[in-house]
Length: 115
Length: 109
Image 1 (cartoon, rainbow over the protein chains, first blue to last red):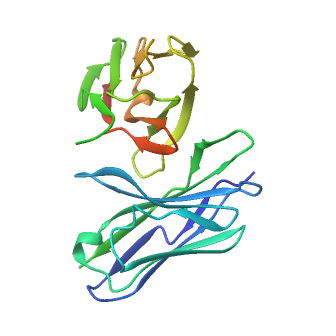
Image 2 (spheres, rainbow over the protein chains, first blue to last red; image 1 turned 45 degrees about the horizontal axis):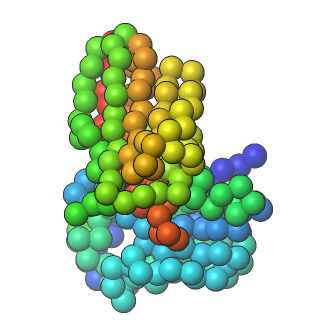
């Protein structure tokens, strides 16, 4: 059974460019989470969805960040325009409410470098 | 200020030694999870504890939830190089979910 799939695994872009990160959750999971991890701040929750609906986006740092989930099998996190301080590893995770939405399965992450 | 503080932040030990990692808070949690993250990968769930005083074992790993559900510990017996990684606790309080600051463990062969 496939786990959470993220693409790309690595992204290098210049300041000011638009960046789109993609995630495919585990089939049947009804929660999807986006996290950012840095050495300084650790693992931070950015936003999460339940049944494709955004529930809590209070962790989204600013208006340059947006996330969508058009269907149960796909989500995107977009940064426009990107800045060097956005450099981090971005993780997508999914979970199933029938077990516990807090028992999350993480993807391998996208390492973003903004120069 | 982090809601979940882990200690130590870094730990380097020899293969075969025992170790304990702590996860502390002033808040009460309805449940607490432990994850392990290896370099270049996402965190992997190890265990969930929900009852104060609960102890769970996973091979050489022993997890304990504090009686007051404000803290937790992870004890590893006879550490092996394969235990190397970042250990993260995560807790649920109210309807909020928080990750701890992490403990980076290196087991030297």
